[in-house]
Length: 282
Image (cartoon, rainbow, N blue to C red; front, side):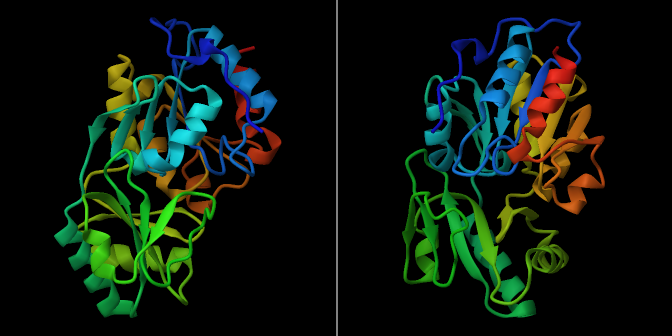
């Protein structure tokens, strides 16, 4: 069971210039969250200590707002959250979107067609752009997080029934790394292709990434990448690490992220974020 974060974890008016990092950006799945969408007491305490010192905390997740809002509410989180792989900047306190990038549905359909022409049938799902839209799952798609709200459709054409911000892909035979590599080679000039987790290869609008969304959210707080430490575990965190001054990969991180990280900490189950924050904000 999660517990509410202290209200002091809400963004403060003026971070101190003497802080090691004025902004802490954390991925959720595989990074801050442990099994069951929970955050450990030690991580709560470490984030509270950093906030008491004047640092800001921004959640940066591949999940769209409808799939993360229950987590933020359970944590008592009242700051900004970058969602949908960078397509959305969400004001948790106000319950509203500050920024949203829509994916062209015709372009998404064309990209899928080109990928399938190369490797055969893929299974697809989409995240809707609206705050109250459930994830639509096409035939064959296996949901990595079965506890999240989804709607299964019978035909792929139904995936394009409402505005979307990204497409999720799976292949019946290829693993995630191979699917990502092939998709980038085929449609990387049309869309952004990233791997966000197990069985989660995604197509996004060109130029959209965790880095682009985090840059917008940080600007709202008057902060920049030079003042940011970022934590992550998957290749979709690579752009965020490139934008931030310091990137910390979890011990459970994908090798592609570890290769560009400035530091590797313990796993999410072993409070890897807390270990680093306790050192920086004693």
